[in-house]
Image (cartoon, rainbow over all chains, first blue to last red):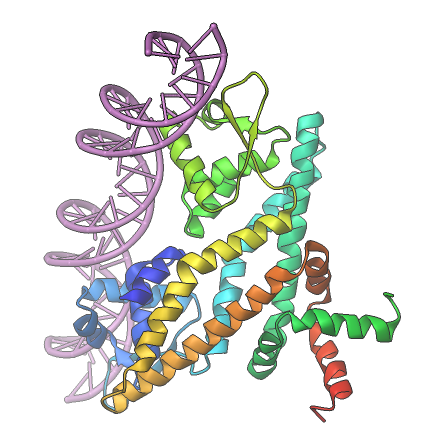
Length: 171
Length: 171
DNA sequence: TTAAAATTTCAATAATTTCTGAAAATTCAA
DNA sequence: TTGAATTTTCAGAAATTATTGAAATTTTAA
């Protein structure tokens, strides 16, 4: 229930999030009818939800010998799930915004007020591009490195100082 | 318009996002009636939107001599805005989830299936806690350091190697 | 104080999103 | 092939969320 609530606050619908929470926490893969029974939602809703989750690359499909039903599970590694979620989100929401901003930035501002807006759009563009480029880079780290980096936290800042001293690029 | 669309995909409503986009890109602070006129939405909607944005700590209020109206602007630094957004989002969406998960983790699993779910909840909890602790730490960096870190990207991984060599903690 | 200006509240309405049941389509064992 | 099992589609219904106008409240200049 809480996952459903949470999903809806992050732009995923309630039942889709619930289905995913159920699949994540179930040791065995489940078929659509089992999901219907557990969550008390309609068969068609489950079908749509699974389709949606598949379009996000978040599911693993299993077949069980002698059973025609499709069974669904999730990756075991939570970092893999997280990475996929971020990557898909980037493709769907961020990339279009970046390209819209780039189009805007091509246009010459016609007056002082447009000039100001132009500058802000550039700031936003650079911020998003920086964050996503970095997120892209993070994608390439494996789960262990990622967890290590996370643990380091602001220590990263200290590490940057070390690096700069070595490279002699900063005082 | 695009910002309104984008906002709605990230759990903010359309007009609230539009109001913020307008304020961000306007050199002068604006009053509620100017927002009404520009966006073509009702006065009450603007009032609610501004209240919502204030509750997110995203606005700067200005007073203009000889004018009783309230004027609103945004911080100039895009990184400051980003930081505030992340922090508020953490308080509202993530912290409650973490505490819900902690409650779940206190309960002893009653059987093998609950045991498995328990393990997954722990994974999720640890992942979220790691990401937020790290995000917390990032909050403390100033805008310049933050931008520098972003630029470094996966280079962070190499820097980590340097650090480990120095600290002698990894081969 | 007063009252005009400005803002906020909130119940009703509108718009949007989600969910469902019925029907259509697909799959596959026999 | 056939037809039972399974999944998908989709138009309408239900639920949720956003927006509005009217009234109430707050603010402040005079």
